[in-house]
Length: 498
Image (spheres, rainbow, N blue to C red):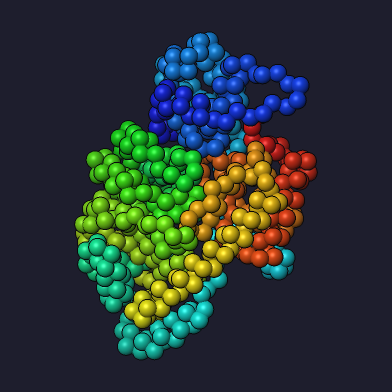
């Protein structure tokens, strides 16, 4: 079982249980006894990530009082959860949520498609779009023209090209967040940035608070650094961040780092409002936690909504907030350019440590991004990217609603992903069945900690038109396979609720 991460109070758990929508009973069946209904409610909260795995539950007496039930009923529900593997207890210490041993962590990630599958498989595994032409070609041509002076040097710029650092700093300053070039380090994509931050701040065994769900690749990166992940459940819908939960986790567990995606969150698409951003910075500062803010989706606003100020606007010196940006989502995933904005002393430490990692970021790609930002090509390319993502999103939403009407989701106002509840079907089974019928989709547990979100999948805005229609048809066929049991095996149930 994962180590203890947080505490769920009796009043909080009671509110979450009461907010659950009752599931219709099969014809002719009887209403379950109170202890069974309570156990099922807690289990569903765990599987959907509303209550984190390894969270300490309230004592039986406290929960009984909050729910106006007898202690015997709560004790029976806890015993049922222990029997099913969703609760672990130690006498005198309490009870913690868990997932059964047969619900292992997902594999590291989706394997690359074999060459023979590239033409026939609809790949919804990657939330990235093709390059926005002609801007990629123009940027590379512009970079080649500016390359000769750099070719006469050693080409080693651990902090990034001075011109690009200055350009990125000026963009923050232009948005009302005064920034010096000394506060910027250019990295090899956002993953390179966060890897460097984790190695600097969070050694093996350190706690890192993360949204639950969160970006799968970052969660795996943090696991491999030896960090202990502390999941903080997201709210239902696009509201996103429950500040009471964040304050409690930061206060109780004192994590060294906290990682958030405040702009069109991956995978849910939620957008944090300004009040939550300010409160999150204040809570991190009070707890002595470094708040790592991933802004890779910041520029992908697809609807006319007001964008709140960036999180670093509430800590412009960069002592509490370390910001990560990237060209990979807003421009093209093949352009591996990212950056970190932080206090100058943090940047110096990151640069010094980089000598033992990747040394530096490719000069030619830095020149290409600098050319785009300097000439105005960045704004035009990103506008093209938004248009493309919006068309894809709307096509995918229509197709899924038509062919899978029982699936539930909120349509985000930006970003590149749709977070879908699959009507009780196992997301892991759906992913397996999808490969059989020609559609690749990542299952929900990849985006959680310790096996949560079995009833979800993530769908990216990467296809449109007839391809989006066909993707939905194949997903429906995969769902039928799962429900019929054709894809079932011993380790993962076809459905995740009773």
